[in-house]
Length: 323
Ligand code: HEM
View 1 (cartoon, rainbow, N blue to C red):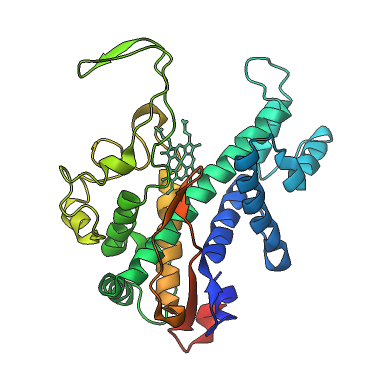
View 2: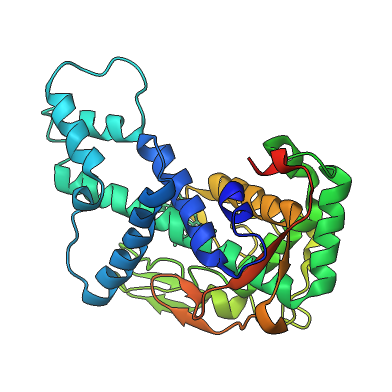
């Protein structure tokens, strides 16, 4: 990502696409290894377009059509077993061949699981980073505070590494504030009680569809002072109380309880690493000095209507930092 952006210093780039490709690569790398670079990266963007189209048409896609690796691996699995490197895809394919009705998975189910994870992991994480960059570019004082923190903790010529992340407290507050104002899943996922229950005096009939409007709750003036203001400082002294565990019902962008998001720690790390890298390596200028807008649209996730177009400027004269 850094090398790619560095090649375009001084010209407007679509930062949304760059962040999307990075998130997409991390996700598919976790599932079956490999990532898309250079011209291949168009496949990632094509996946994004196709998935958006799928949401519009609600037809059944076959992920194998987009990722031939799934079919290739399945065929490989029919021959001798792959001894080393069992990644997530390999584990699923082995479940396809157990022959045990209770534990085996059909290829259709494997495709569905992979599509769910690629999309659930990529879109949410990418959208949050796009919103965080948008809010920081709209609030230069907050942006300066993040950059000062990065300079103090990482240091000019160094690259951002995972061990730096727990010390980037202001950046963590920025990510939380972004998830408060722009939760990617504003209604979480629908839940359904298996029995009729009474909650706070309200009867919830068995099998009803329940949505939690976390978008509204996280903007409620009863819990938040100046709720529409982007104010990361509000998280600084309450980092433990306002965490992602879903035990505080004024802030739960990842859900709560048994079905809480399983990807929290991965999402947290990717978002912190990518944002820290983008802001440590580059300064960002707005074409024509125009502030990015905050118009939202709800598809599967709550995303920006307009992509984020910005001009990168190198912060370091050490070209090794961009390799
Ligand atoms: C900013 C990033 C993310 C946000 C805001 C987010 C949010 C959510 C939410 C709201 C739910 C439903 C929880 C509920 O209704 O109780 C969920 C479920 C889920 N998420 Fe995430 N997610 C993110 C990133 C990820 C990542 C990176 C992965 C993959 C590694 C992932 C995998 C999943 C899965 C598999 C479920 C279903 C869990 C279940 O039903 O038991 N998510 N997520």
